[in-house]
Length: 400
Image 1 (cartoon, rainbow, N blue to C red):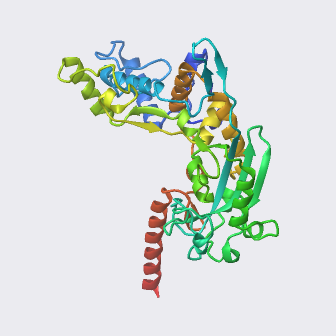
Image 2 (cartoon, rainbow, N blue to C red):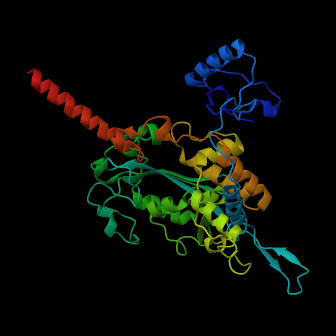
């Protein structure tokens, strides 16, 4: 069942859950209403059945525009089956089996932690590969600063970092002071981060170097960092796997859905295999590889908000992003599904894939804050605004 209530815009099949189908303005467009009215008038004037009845259902009285393709369906099924065969040893609990194979002993888990970083803007773009302090990256020559941490093309700088342990205890929640008292800051992205100039320049704020040293002091060498796209947080803080901690686990890889890269091409491959033009894949080799399948595949990744909303019924990012909440729910999802079986994960992934899309912050609120593009979608709005501004300036100059 959907947990969004009246706010959901997805056409749900009420008949499938024992309900009744209601025609509402929210779920049906005006074009359909006009067609329905015309259809009812025609039905009243004549009792003759249509020569070719439309392919509709009682739940969705819309004409189906797609024809079922068994070859496409087979390609999709094979891609999911290949994902079931992927190695999950980096996520699952490890076991030690005796030499005679009779004793299976569980190996103690390493300590798990999660960190989450909220960034402020030092430029007006959306690039977040590495960090840029807006002051010629004066910190890139500091001690123990890894190569690639600073990037001249980046438009982001850490503004707040939180660290949570495996039991949900908050180990650190640090506000980071930007260099030169915020001279290079374009926006604190307050609607997204909750940070302001007063907070980032307050007495409790620490420099990035102090914040990183605090995180390193709390993180053991055998610790495992867990999080959504955790590699970005690690890069922003300049942490090094194998040196500052053991390894990291991106939980988006647990829930991602594997599918054909090009469904039409995959369908053609299935047809050729069936007709004998292409030999069927042998059982030897890596059965999870694209080479075994015979066609290229890709992954659809889901946001942390989408996963929490559909699996935990919790909307954690409906407004200002809280790094403590994001880190805590990352660990909660990790522990809940790290040892899930293949069948359970298949059901979970299919459910996430078929669920109504969960909007991101830029989609739900605004793609531009203080002239800063929150995402790539913000660029088209800025270009449109420039055109309107030039048109208005020209119009005003012509009147003078």
